[in-house]
Image 1 (cartoon, helix red, strand yellow):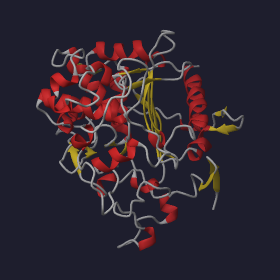
Image 2: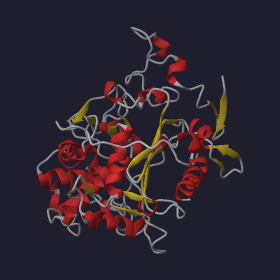
Image 3: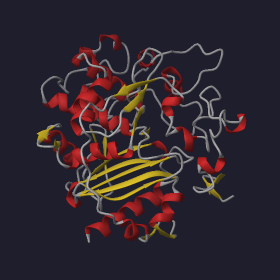
Image 4: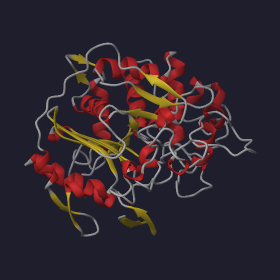
Length: 412
């Protein structure tokens, strides 16, 4: 079998780790050594992750995000697969690669490109199929941030209000004097760490409280997301530099649910899934109390995630209706697009700035999830992956120049 060194560790490569080749969850029942279970606490380890990210609903409790009863919105097809697969580029380490090989080398599960709303490239690998939802991880944040920004635009929320004015339960925590806007833009001073390679990082306490990861038999910590949020103390001033902390999304979504009186999954259905004409239901992981894991829990099909990105590219317009206020998208562009302003903040309403040569903005999640929204080039790029290393540091030296090369090709 092929292997590759990443971060000083040896892993099966993208082809050899295909869950079909490994026989993961194959058979009735699957043999013990090929079985992927939540209780084993290895379901997000490699290579099990290559199967589990396309099957999270089979491992954990979820809330359904219903697509609605209408016919799914059409996506026209204009195939450019042969041209794109043959594209060559040089990665950040000086190695020349083809586009097709780079997909395997970054453990891609699905890749889709829309140009002017038409599918020009669509590929699936491993356990992922067109009809299967895949874990979006932190792209979930961008869904939540867009909804929150929409309610701010509509006057339902005031982003200059303090979190305490919405959630008195968080008195005495880090958020009691933070504004909603500071939370939406991840500019809060929290005593919280999110380094996935550190087994003692706060993110793992959050993961166990939310049920994202199993707890040991003697676990006596918080057992829900809200209980965990109440333990976070302040560290530094709010409103300063960007400090990426997933727990901010959970606070923001708590505010969203409290003020609207609607669950996050219902808001996704009402505001996005149904009016976009999504092809399949989505779903979102929950904690023990049934609260959605809004920072990372959403799963959607590749095409349905692309529809969301295309909605943003079109400044919120879809099928003759304005689903997201155009001002929300324009605000994200103004604060993230480095080609438009040297003073771009690079993060706004839980969207990132895309690489400068590409322009536009993007949503990103661990293990290689990406959604690039590139209005200037009339492009939308959606990517699912199950990279063995959570941090982007292992895959970005390939992905970043690959995406720039693709943008150049389609621009020319």
